[in-house]
Image (cartoon, rainbow, N blue to C red; front, side, top):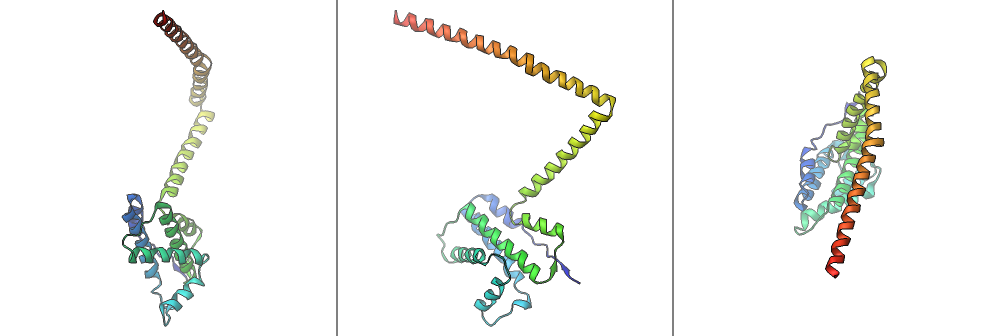
Length: 202
């Protein structure tokens, strides 16, 4: 039987990214690298040297060049104290590591159902996409219930009719009147300014 995909603690990475500072970005890279290294402790990737071990890993992932770049940036962070890194670079590095983690989980025969795959694609980076999806689902549900209420109940139909009448009033009457008032006000203001300008000249 296949094992369930591991649940990784991504909260430190999210917090580090949200800091919006160079130190926070560096910490995010180091945290995702820590998760990656822990996963590689599996006996399947044992090798005589680290280089051979990394070769094994690269053969198992979809975008090895992105992981190589991510690892290079991580090494620079560790070896060069003055090395700066931006938000976009950090997000790309975290994304590369997270894709590699997904691929390695697959290689280790850890079971990922459809739900796990969808969540895994979004979780590498703060949970904004999931939050947006959740809010959209809530509002969509409210809209469906409201639509049914308005179409299938007498109170709903009355409310809908009253609302349409109100909107018509705002668009075709109130806004027109407001536009006329604004136009008159601008005309009067312009006339006053013109008279003042002529008086100053005289």
